[in-house]
Length: 117
Image 1 (cartoon, rainbow, N blue to C red):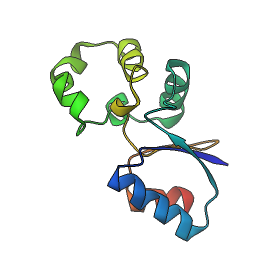
Image 2 (cartoon, helix red, strand yellow; image 1 turned 180 degrees about the vertical axis):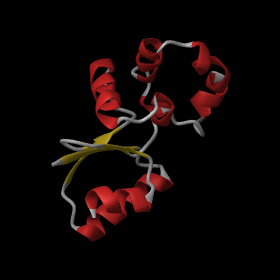
Image 3 (tube, rainbow, N blue to C red; image 1 turned 30 degrees about the vertical axis):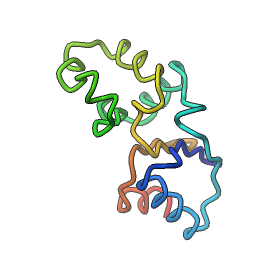
Image 4 (cartoon, rainbow, N blue to C red; image 1 turned 90 degrees about the vertical axis):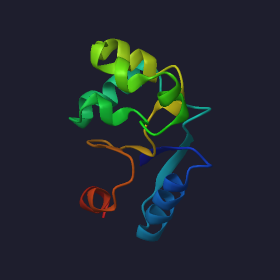
C-alpha cells in the first residue's frame, strides 16, 4: 500500500486524494504537518525518487518564502537540505506519495496516471 503525506487544508492534496479514490487506489493517509517524515525517511525517499532535491521543497509555501530558501538552498549541502526538510512538514512538497519503487512529489495528473493509473 502506498503512503500519501497530505495537508488537510491543501486544495492540491484534496484533488489528489479525489483522484486516488476515483481510480480505486488504496493508500495510507498521513498528515504532513503533524506526522511529517523524519530525516532518514526523507533521505531514503530522495534516493529512491531519482528527483532533484529541490522537488521535495514546497517552494510556494509561506515558510519557504519567509526563510528565503530560494536564495539559501543553492549554497546548502544535500545533507543540510534534508535536515532542514525534516524540521517542518510544511516545507515538504505535497502531496508526497511513497510506493515500494517510486516517489511522487506534488500532483501532476499525467505523472500519476503513468505510475498509478
